[in-house]
Amino acid sequence: MNFENFGIVSFTAETKASDFVSYLEKGKVMATRCRKCGTNYFPPRLDCSKCLGSDVEWFEIKGNGKLVTYTVVNYGPTGFESDAPYTLAIADFNGVRVFGRLNKSIKESDIKPGMSLRVLSVKLPGDRIGYEFQKV
Amino acid sequence: MQDVAIIGVGQSVFSRKCGVSIRELCFEAYAEAMEGLGITNKDIDASIVCSAPEYDKQRTPAGSISEYLGLTPKPSFYIETVCSSSSTGLRVGWSLIKAGLHKVVAVIGFQKMSDLTSRDAAERMSRGGDIIWESPFGVTMPSGYAMYARAHMAKYGTTEEQLAKVRVKNSHYGAANPKATYRKELSLDEILSSEIISSPLKKFDCCANADGASCIIIASGDVAKRVTDIPIWIIGLGAATDTMTMSGRQSLTGLRCAQEAAKEAYKMAGVGPKDIDVAEVHDCFTIAEIMAYEDLGFAKPGEAPRLVEDKATYVGGKIPVNVDGGLLSKGHPIGATGGSQIRTVVNQLRGKAGEIQVEGAEIGLVHNIGGVGQYGNVTILRR
Image 1 (cartoon, rainbow over the protein chains, first blue to last red):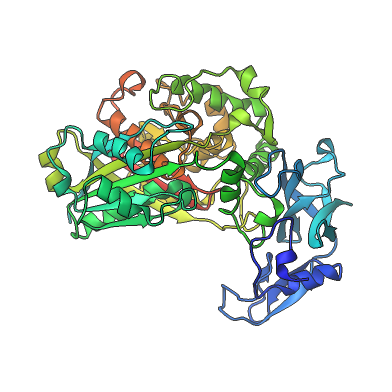
Image 2 (image 1 turned 60 degrees about the horizontal axis):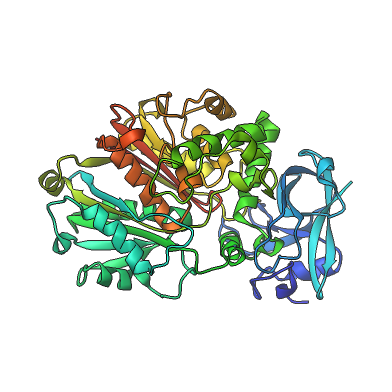
C-alpha cells in the first residue's frame, strides 16, 4: 500500500515517512527517534528540527497509554458524511502523544480522560489502512 | 519613529448569505472606515487584503479589491493566517508605517463562505489542520476546540452550563448589534438542549460561517492627528504560533499562542490585564472565550468560569468582553473577523459604542486566533 491509502480520506501521496504505512500493514504503529540527539517524534518525521539532522530510527508505540482528551464528532466534513459519529482522541504513550480515533464500540459514557488505551493498526474500508485506540 | 494610530474602522453587515460579490462586500466596509476622514483614496499608500484561501474562485483577490475601491496604482498584497488574518494584516501595516515606507495603510479583511456548502466549508477548515497526519481522521474546527473543552472540564471541573452562559451573554449583546448574523437572545435551556455537534460542544456553543468584510485604516501619528479628532493608538502588538498538530500541543486547557502573544503585547504596551477596560476575544466557540479569559490574565487558570458565573464580563462588570455579541452572534467570516473585533474596540475607545458603551474606556484589547490555536494575535489600543 502507498501512503495515499492512509486514513479515511488522504490528502497526501508523498512523504519521506511513507514507511509508516508499511509498518501499519505489519500491524505496527511507529514513531521516529533522531539518532543524533535522541528526540522522539510522533507524528513520525525523518528530519529532526532540533539538530537539523536526517538520521532517524523507527520505534514501535507499544504498551498502555492514557487518554488525554476526546470528542465525539456528530457532523463530519465532506468525505466523512457517512462516517459520523466517530470519536477523535489524543493519547499519551510515555510522553509520546498520538492523535487518532477511539474504536467505535466504546460507548461515550465509558470514555474518561486518564483511561488506559492501546493503539493498534486497523484495516479500513476501500483497501485503506489506519490505526485506532482500543480499551485495555 | 512615529507612533501608529487607527484613524478609521468599518465593517459590512455579517450574514449567512450576503447576495453580493466579495469586492462589493469590501466596499461596504471601506466606505464606513473612510467616513468623516479628511483623506481620499489617493491618500491610501498601500492596501493589505486579508482572508483565508480556497473559499472563492478569484485568485489573488487583492488585485480585484484594490481596483474596486479605487486604490490602484498603489501597492496591494495578500496576508493569511486563517481566522486571524486581518489582525496579522494590522501588524504588517503597523510595521510598514513604523519603517517609514508608508503613511496611510488600509487593512481589508473579507470572507464569503456561502458559496460553499456547510460540509465543504468544514472540509476547508479540516485542511486547516495537519493534512498528512490528522485531517485523514475527520478533524473539524468544533472537534479541535471540543478536545480543549473536554480537557478543561477534566482538569478544572468546568461545566457545560458554564460554557452555555458565555453564549447567553453574547446572544444578549448580539441581539442589539445591527451588523450581527444572529440577533436572537438565547436562554440557557435553548443552548443546553441544542443538538451536539462535537461533544461537549452543541450547536449554540459554536459560531456560524458567515459572509462579511472589515476595514481598518491606520496612519502615522502626524497624519492621524491631522485627519481625525480621536486617533486610537496601537500601543501593544503580540503574535505567536503553536503546533499545527493537535498531538504537539503542550497544554490542552489553554492556547499557548494566545498566552505568548498576550505576554508580548502587555510588555510592549507597558500595561497589564487589570488595566484593560474593554476586550474583544475570539469566541469561535464558548470554550474559546473561557480559555481567553485565562490566557489573557483576566482570570487565573481554571477560574474563568467564575467570571462567567459572576457576570464580570458584562457591561458594568470588572472586564466587559465581547459586548458586541462576539463571533458567536456576529458570525465568523474568517478573514474579516479580526478587523470587526478591532472596529468594536475602537468605537468603544472613541466613546461611540452606543448602548453597549463601557463608560470611560481608555485601553482596549483584541484577541484574535487563527485555526484551532495555531496563530494568536493580541493587540492593545489606547485612546
